[in-house]
Amino acid sequence: MNRTFYTIMSAQFFSSLADNALLIAAIAQLLELDGPAWMVPLLKFFFTVSYVVLAAFVGAFADAIPKGRVMFITNTIKIVGCAAMFFTDYVEFAGIPGYVLVLAAYAVVGFGAAAYSPAKYGILTELLPAERLVAANGWIEGLTVASIILGTVLGGALISPRIASMLLAIDVPHIDTGIETPAEAAILVISTLYIIAAIFNLFIPDTGARYGKQQTNPALLMRDFYLCLGMLWKDKLGQISLAVTTLFWGAGATLQFLVLQWGAVHLGLPLEKSAVLQGITAVGVALGAVIAGRFITLKRSLDVLPAGIAMGVVVMLMIFVSYMPFVYALLIVIGMMAGFFVVPMNALLQHRGYVLLSAGHSIAVQNFNENISILVMLAIYSAMIKASLYINTIILAFGGFVVVTMFLVMLRHRYNQAKGDTTYLIGMKTDPQRGFP
Image (cartoon, rainbow, N blue to C red; front, side, top):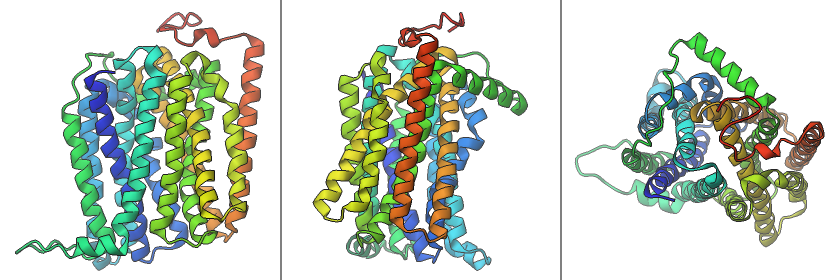
């Protein structure tokens, strides 16, 4: 790996660190503003909407200009969304509930993240050969998960009474900062992380990759996106990897809030300590990602599918544990299984997308599918919370859904292979079945 790769990793780490810390701070701000409990999962829902709405456009944007510049612009949008959370008093003065602004501001951060993602992942396929993508994804997923661990723990620490009181006690002479609550103090610290990420973005060099002139007509962009979407879903390798990553990100986003609720109801933990459970799960994901990156080659990427079924089964065991050492061990195992099976699938999907489409367009298609899954699963989870379903019932439904869905994916892969082995295409830079790169 070269210096450019590590610069990209650093930018991604700090941007993701801020995203995850901001989620915890935004939850705390919702609670401070008396937002209803069922609205908490909607934070992620609003964050994710942009990935779906902008899917037809962000791929073209990422391919139109150097991706380092795209990452800087979109990270700046995140800073704007983060800063907007300081103005809840102004909207309340206008008669609008403050928690509405929190949702809207986090949606702006999601807007920046949606446009950031195709550049972040697409630049890997420009920078590295196909045989290095699994290892590179192991790195980027490992660092992303490390940022999740530290971000959730940092967010929980910043809103804890002890640290929040220290932050609020800081006095800047002759300046009224307007920072009055633990959540606002946390958001101020988190905004500096986005600024650090932006600085790293400035040092990402142009890879020299160039694509054809990108469409600017929205109707034509949507048509092209639809064609790209169909091409990847019809591909026998693309559809399997796309189905798995779509399931993983929907399930992962839901699990993030499920663990918080489980910690509060089943284990009796406050928000800042439940946030640590998210970090524990992310430790497991990082370990699984590292193991996959070390031992699973791109050619063998489809061998990891059974780990998805195993993960669903282990998730259902959450209802039986309350002793904290067992809780930590179980969450690490769940995370390891998730990281182990998603990293090779992500690499395979990036590879097939790059061969069939382009770096930016393939990631946009991936984001579209994965984030529709997040929206649907979070909406269902929010409805379950609003209906006052017991948390253990939700856990059993969630784990069962993962098991059944992964089993169906494996059946589909077996059916595809029975029609003709296509695994020989893995690693090729062109697709001989279609005759174009």
